[in-house]
Structures are given as C-alpha cells and as structure tokens.
Length: 222
Length: 301
Image (cartoon, rainbow over all chains, first blue to last red; front, side):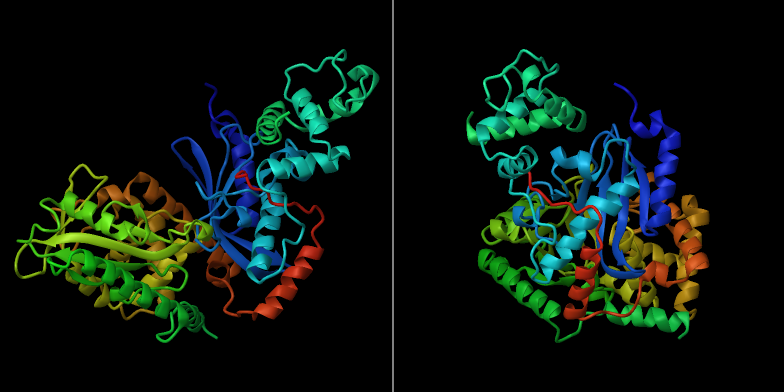
C-alpha cells in the first residue's frame, strides 16, 4: 500500500496546513494514526464580520487531494437527518454531490478552496435553514434521486434509461466507439455523442460514476 | 474595555440563565430521567443527583452537558450483582425511553425519534455503586478500560473544582477546548487547570489563561494529572496520552501567537450578538455574493 498523502508529499502537507491555518485561525491540523484531521471552529465570515460559526472536523482522504474530504459538524447544532444533509448513520455532512465535484472543487484544487467553496456554502445554507429560510442555492434530492436530478440537468434529459446509459459508459475502464450511443439514437457512440462522453469522462472519475451507476440502477431498474 | 472586562463579558454570554429555556429543558429532562430510573429500580432506592459541570459551577452555553449520577447502595444487589450488570441494567432501563450511546462509564441519552436525527439531549447518566454505608466513595464500571472497576468520589471532584477559586478560568478553557475541537476530556482539562493555577486564584483571567497556555506550549511533557478522589488508584495518564498532549501544545502555541498578533477576539470572538432578523439579512447578503453556488446532497435515499 502506498504511503498516505502527507508522508508521500510532505511539501503539499506543509502548504495545505499553512494556507488553511492562515485563513482559518481556529482550525488546526492533527495527524492521528496516519490520518490527517482538521478540527476546530469554522466561521462564516462576510465583509470581515463573523456571521455564524460551527465546530467541525474534516477528515482528509488517504489520497488527498484526489479523494473528497469528509466533513462532520461536531458541535451538535445540526440534526443528523437527511433533510439537513447530514448522514444519520455517521454524522457526515453531504456538502456536495461527488459527480459535480469537477465544477465546484476541481481535481488538483487545494483544501482551502474546498473550505471556502462547498463547505462555506453548506454551513451558510444551514444557518439560513435554521432561521426558517430555504436552502439558498437549492438542494439535490436524497440518494439516487439527487443523482437523477444532476444528470438530467447536465444531459438535458429526464429519461432515466438514457442517464443509466451514460453512467454505464462512464463507469467502464475503456470507452469504445462501436458501442451504441447512450442517447438511444441507435447510432454508434463514435458517430453520435462520443465527444460529450469523452468530456464527461475527464470530469467525472470512473470510481464516482460507478458508485452513482450502482445507486441509480438499484433505484430506477434499467 | 480592558481584556479582563472583555473576558468577563464572554463568560456572561456563556452563562445559562437560571430561568432560561436551556436550563429549564435540562431540568425537565433530568426529572424525566429520574422518573424512568426510580420506576425501574423501585426497590433499590438509588441516589440520583447532578454531577459534572452543573454541580461544579463550570457549565458553559456552548457545551452544556448534564451528568446525572445514579448510585446504588453497596449492599443492594437488586440492580445487579456486578458493576457491569448495574451498567447494563441501567442502560436497559433507559433504553425504554431513549436512544443510548454507551460511553466508558456513562450512558449518553439521545432522542429515539428517527425524524429528530438522534438529537443529543446533552445528558450522561453515570451508574455506579457506593463502596460502603457512608455513601461517599463509589465504584464505577469502565467498559473500555483494562481495569473494569474505578473507585472515585463525586463530592471530592465537585469540591476540588468548585473551591479551586479558578472556575472562571476553567469555563474559558472549556470554551477554548470546544472552539478548537480539542479531544481532551473536559474533566481532565479541569483537573489540569486547577493544578496549573494553584496559588494563582487571585490573578486576573488574562494572567491565568496565559499561564495555562504557556505551560501547555512549553512543558506539556511534564504536565501530569491525578484523580483527587483516588490519586494512586486511578491512573488518568491514558487520558492525557501523546495525541492529547500534542494537540494541547500545538493549539496553545497558536492561541498565544493569535493573541499577540490579533488580540483576544481572535480566540473567543466578538461579544456582539445579532438578532435573528439582522443575522438572516447578513446571511442572505453573504449568499448573494457567492461566486460558485453548490447544493447539498444526501447519500441516504
């Protein structure tokens, strides 16, 4: 097994730590049993004013920054319910849909961008929901429904059969031009949506597409 | 406003009002817990009362857990022959009404209603058995430790902290622990504060906190902690292990630098609190300024 990211790339670890600890004065890096944790207070600041704060912990993936960090709210403010986008089983926060990562926290981005972007948006939303407002940027449906909504917007179709076809393609090791196009035109992929599929394959990692494919197929039975 | 005045205001903002909603809710929950236990252990007459920060006077709004002790007479075996049996029977009794998360010696109570998302009631019930008729020393069960029986004394603990003369500093250190996500157990931090501030109860809060953090930063390896109720028999060193020490030292170092560079507000925040309406407006303005909006998802379908 390859060493965890912080030992494989100590320079990256130092850089991530310095950036985050400079921007977030009460967040601290700790390495415990080969796992990097970031713990402390996450403030929601706007125009230099702290509007709210949450006590959080962020568990960085062993292959950080490839893997998506796991975020938990540890102060006990947010109910652990799917409606609040907190996984009831383990208290993890679903700050983003993994398939959408390329748009909101692209590969190669730094941890600071993750905190400033999806994490801040998530807690900003929680504060507003606490005060009776709706989710400020909307929300994805739970589980496979959220995946359906996302790909429906991305592909411009509500047809779950078509979405299943694209997810199936994206979850394969190699994408071959002679396959039937997932748009169900009856044409071969190379003569139809090959460009779109190749583009999506650069954005959505195969592992993520495969997970979504499995969830999606279980729910929509194609 | 002096820094000590600022810290006094922070402490005031962390004080739960006697007639306030939070304490009233806790009192109601305590009464409900006591009813469950008394109904279940009708023949045993357990001693049920407050322990923890409520009894010690070190409660803070951001971490207001309530400890309720449930100690059985030393010669009564109806609640269980062994400490483990007492712990299990207490858990089963509470499970009739609550979702229980077992801890080392305590039982954490949560809302059993799934729609509440296992909302935390902020209550720990600590079962135990008095060692003799004096109802002073007590044996607790330790589910995760090698040594399953722990002898301690609640009144000694309460007195040790309450009469230390440094409860304000302890409350601020608890706030510091919470805000910085430190894993050290609260009662260990309390014992450390009492020890490090011995003979300094007359000093101001700035001096007291500065001293504790400097000790954490510079002498963490030499810092030790003992159970005042059982200094030789109850080894707390496992609770102050290398990880806990390293966290304390690193965060204390950053805290001292923060104060030097940016002042105390960088540590404990502003004392101004916005009303809901003003807060909502500010949050909405912050939302409107977001460049890359994201929507939350949920893995659970």
